[in-house]
Image (tube, rainbow, N blue to C red; front, side, top):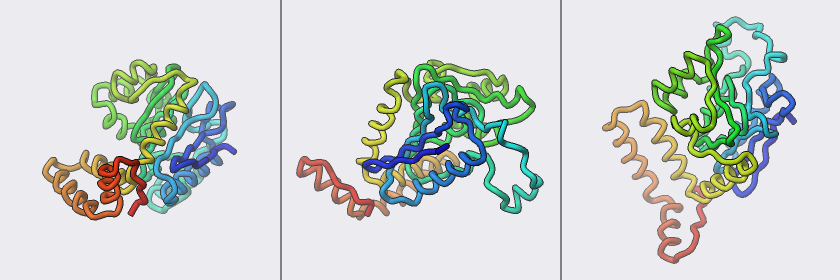
Length: 258
C-alpha cells in the first residue's frame, strides 16, 4: 500500500509508504492520503493523527513528477468546476490535532504536507526546502501561506525566494519544528506525544485548535469573544465534569467526547 493507516488507543498513524520513491506522492497515493484524512476526521475513535514517512531517508519529496502529468482539465474548470482532487495538500483539513514526524527530506510538497500539521518534530537528519522558484513554479499547496504563519516573514521569505534547504538545527531555530530527536527515536517520540494528547478531552482539544487557528485571522477582541463563547459551550459538558471529578478523586479522567 502506498499509504498505510493504523489506529491504536485513539491515535491514528498515517505512513507514506513509497520509500524507494522517497515517499513522493503519485496519483494513487494522493487519493489514498485524502481518504485517510477523511477517515481520521469522521472516525470518533481517533483523537490524534501522526503522519510520517516510511524508511530513514525521506518524509516526503512532494509530487512524483514521473507519474504526475498535467491535468487534462483547464485551470478554470479545476478551480470553479469542482474537478478531480489534485495534488493539493491545502485541502487536507481536520479538527483533530495533527503531528508530523519528519524523517529525512521534506521538500516541496513534502514540506507543505508537514505544514498542515499542528506540531512538527523531526529527526536529526531532516532537511526542509521549497525549491519551486528554482524551476519556475511556486509552492502551490499551501506553502506560500502556511510557512510565513509558521516561522515569521523573514525566515519564510528566505526559504521561499531562495529555494535553499535548511537542516534540522536551523528548522528548530526558526520554529519550523518543536523538537529534534535521533532518527531511531522519532516515531516513538511522536507516538508518545500523540498518546499523551489522546488522553485529553477531545471536545476541548477540538475547541482549542479551532480557536487558535481562527484567532490568527481575527482582532484580539474578536478572538477573545470567540474564546468566551467556546468556554461557555464546554462548561457543562460531561467531559469537563469528569475532569473535575477525576482531579478530586486523584485518578486519571475517562473522557468520552460528550
